[in-house]
Length: 144
Image (cartoon, rainbow, N blue to C red):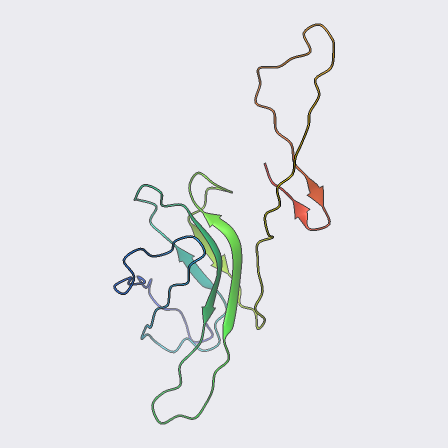
């Protein structure tokens, strides 16, 4: 933030025995220095446990008013919509996210497609290679 940064803060899952599961929301309260207006966050994991890969949709931070203070702070949204996984996406397990004043969904909804690929009738036309394709549309591409 404009007043500096915090040290790395471990988010303690005491309340939740099975944290960061599919379509879940985990909440934390932390006390740390007043960094001022937040310019970015860095969030990640150590990648050490089996199944450590994590699809992070977003983070919402709301500063809490000090006791006796009547200021109501707005929520700050950090949209991600990416994997934090060594074996998914770009292999990164730490992401830096910029703040936004508006909530949203960073990832696109999944849609199932039925694809038919026809191999030609030529001598040697088949392949033993791994075949891939990317769908590209107005919302972006499907990745590889």
